[in-house]
Image (cartoon, rainbow, N blue to C red; front, side, top):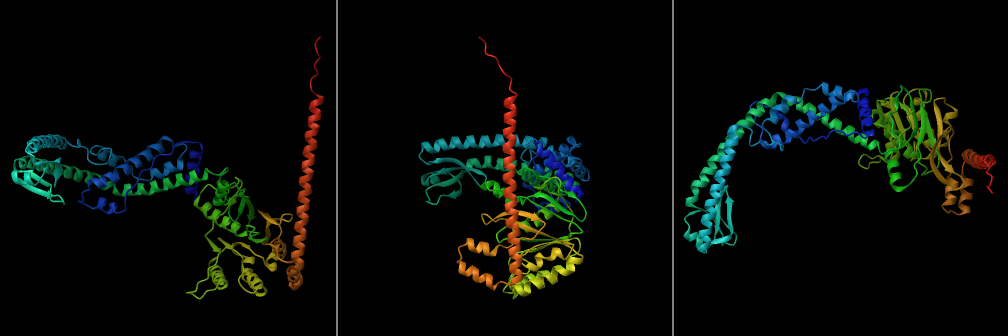
Length: 529
């Protein structure tokens, strides 16, 4: 990971300065590799046209890394481990043109034959044009003139001309009115052209066979370069994507710790930017001493989004990507991430929603060690709450003593109270504005949060009689816990509002004092008579 991480850091720093990245043109198909390495196989011009930009790209990458070796130390080290593409480039540049096909000057013989072919084509066409003028004067020719059929020059005659001209009919139009005729006198010209074309093909085959033999020892190296070009292309794409964020950093590697500060879900942040919506960052810390984070709070308050953010950032961190977070962030490497989210019911396997959750937990209990990250969404939901909460707590107990890092969100009161019973657990809640009865989508670590079921129900317009009856039916302990949490959050909200008001008044008085002080110290001027 260290090498991949350093490669991303070098590329990100390079692009952040606005420096240009080398152009990467590599469209080689996997099917070409077996042929390149096969003894006696001769590449055709379509294959050399694919190979030529690839070899030029490899050489360009090498020259780019050599030129900027001080800034791109890791990338330069990657190139040093590969065979140089220069021998293959030298062999190809001598015979190929810019399009990757054989140049007419690839050999003296090919150059001579190319000129000879052009001259013969001109002679044949001039003779055919002269013959065509006579045919037109006689009324035998059509307006289509001279063309090619089967790589031979022919003229287009009408039915009368077909009877008057001795020659070979190569084609007839669908209407039967036009005949593509090669006059007998033109056969000599066409035969000469064919012989010249065959001579050119033989010379091209000889040159391609020679080039194939020269390239064959470098086939494995070119394939290795192909893999590196893909990696550099990914580097550029990822780092260019990361430059969209106002701040992108590389969290440091710290064993056993997840310490994320002001971290965003990257896709959510981009969507918020496009819609003009503020997206709140998350900050949380997990350590070997506190491996559990139990998140509670209102429905639609962002608990599931937070879990997705944790999982995505951890995976991208292990890939070495620059991420939208504060520079002080840190994380550790995980052997695996187990995600329990969404409805995994399956009729074919006779799995209900809750049964699917239990099946996932059974798997996680078997495989998850201290180097795993477990993310559980709405843990224990989908069954009788009176049994689901205790069963969820029982499933977690083996991990509470030792095991993986676990983040879960829940509405169960017994899971919210785990932090008071286990030192490995810490509580967190999603923010909720008790004045507007709307979630703030902020993660607040340190205490559990209420589900605000009654408050949200009242806001939804349910009758007071229904709410009163629901209160009567609620278990006393659960109701007291929820009331305490709501009252506590309400007091926190009032305290926050008072603090904001005090700060506003303080700032206003400070500005007023500064204004008075400035006025008192203004230099006085005396009016002149």
